[in-house]
Image (cartoon, rainbow, N blue to C red):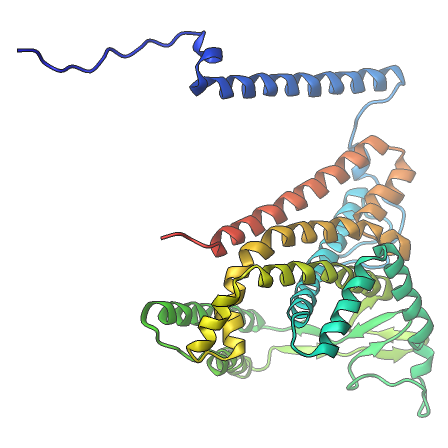
Length: 404
């Protein structure tokens, strides 16, 4: 009687790294990695040797020296005696401010325009098409300069707000839009304001939880839970109660005309507003086309099936069309966010001091440390680009269609 036994396992041989398809791809990847490391090492050694021959060396000690220049728009304390490193941080924050606000505005405008491009109203559809074609076919630098010129030429100067017969007046007595910049009320935090802020953040988290629960109930049990008015209540009621219970710890500092300019409040230079607005409406034209393509990628039968169930058009768009369209919209949307962030380096054209204007501009010219400054610029833009890609890829994996 014979018995069945497993064949003896084959021992590993070096020849399998080339001849065996199970290991061949790893071999080639390892060789490519070694070649890449060798190339980088050669270029680095060549750079260091050339710098040494020229009597130069890579050093970042200049970052601790006084910058000696002012920055007109800043989110943190800074003066001309601050270090170059402090100036670089101010530039980074200014760049991130434009990138975050610009991406938000571009998304809102782009989604709205993309949906309206598919409207049944002929006039609205054509107006949105004209907007898309005009803005995406003209370089963004030209739009930045045009919007900046419009702000300077049309908006009144602070002196126009003076006197009873002033040609200009503040909006709602709290906002002033001038050729120098925009002035907004500034919140002043008092004792207990942290609790109010915490309640506000908890309210936002509660709204997201409510909408997630309502969506799960709709998909699992077919139960439709209203979310609009409960969300409004969650957003306002807790924070208002906390505000008055804590004795109104948050007040507003309003801008006031003193002398030849406004004092107090939050000041946003016209260069910041023009740059952010131009980048937003320019990028929104591309996002609108991404949204339109994503919606058209959803089968028309999906819309007809949802309508046959009695769903309203708004519900069909939110519950049926857009969730399926996101798998087409998100990947190119990541590229548009990256483009907007990198296009913010055009800020120097309107005098807005972002990282390119501080570290890559004045600091580079004053210190002569071109290699160090350029390397830091590359590192920052690489880091922020990879961060945006990572965050959006996580969101893309969360909303993509999942097979059963």
